[in-house]
Length: 105
Image 1: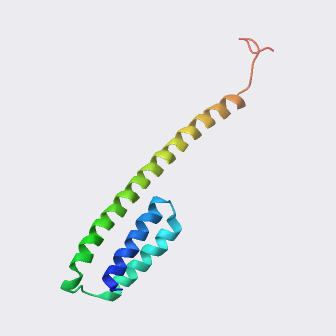
Image 2: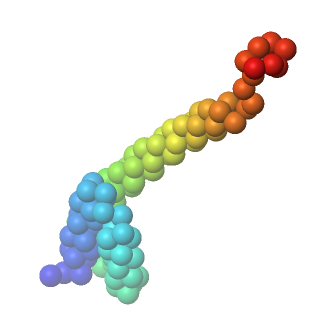
């Protein structure tokens, strides 16, 4: 297989990994593709079609990663809100209880 086409196939596999949320595998695959691309050096004219397709696939991957980043940020923000509510509840539970207005029980 042409090495430039191989990069395209690898990028397409990365898009699938991202869509499936397989982040550890995606990190390894992306690092490997980057290493292979660097080893290839400048692309010949014959690689133009593969590189154009690779740009499209890379754009898809970037969009998927941004969407997942945004989803994770929303999820984390929700956890922060939940922690504030729990902390408020815990503080209310820890406050001394009094039976009457004058503090006598």
